[in-house]
Image (cartoon, one colour):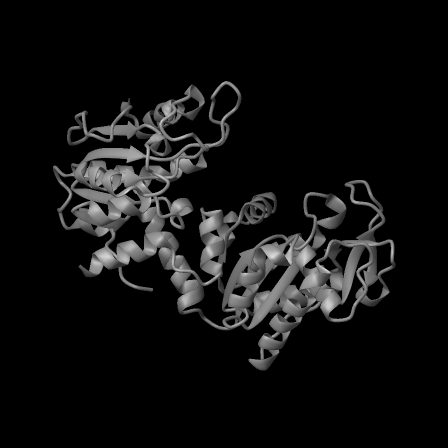
Length: 399
């Protein structure tokens, strides 16, 4: 992956003292009806970059989006005020919330942190208005992008400011994502195994096509696996599938086969007559699925085969549970996959909301090489796209 400037390096070189540092963080946290933060992982994840800047003697500005506000129309529920309170608790110092900040009508001193109100309230933010980008760049001496969850969006505070600020660099969170992605996809240790699961092939077709040219094994799960089973000539009963994409599924299988790689098709499955947590679960051979069966998980034989492959992998990319893991009767496959990843000596990177939920459920957080913080950005990387944030930071590093 192309080189980029790291904020940690600038701090170590003494280039940050007395500078105005603008950090784009991802503080888009869930809140209850009273505006109380219900889960603060993203706020805690923002602290290392802020602490780096403070310890280096910088005057620190931080901003983020929150929710989906209408530009130019402030509503109380769009405010970052609850985040400012939590951030102050984590940092152990006051954090002022600044409104109407684009024109720079505020002060911030070295050693101080201010939180700039919800950046998506600024007119022109989402479409990266050039005039707004100039104003954003003029606010700081150093721009730090530390929000991987927004790295796939070319907005004012994720892209425009990176073009106009005197210096643009990657914060510790974004740098860690860039390093992990490069390790997993740009220069992976082989065999490279990818797990791509979800309800529909159509939502992840471009990912499957991209990975088919890179990986040694492409494990599919969920409704995606059902479509691939159909493509392999197996019955799937009344299971979720997309028959109109059988040609695409077959093309992925053939592309893998031509490279000496493979798409493992389930040999057994767990079925039920209805989609419910209390439905009776039955293990069947993949060839014995009845017309009124719903496939809700891979079977134990398939899970054991895939687990053995994962334990031998040099690199694992994981996106999606392989069954309805929320239901106890249909979580066996996902649990086996999760444990195999945890036991593997290979480097693993995982991303996506359901994947993170499975990692948390099975308590393997410390055993996954890297857990990605950005759902949409992670998926675009798997599609083979160059993220706008990566592109602009690389270009600025070469300037």
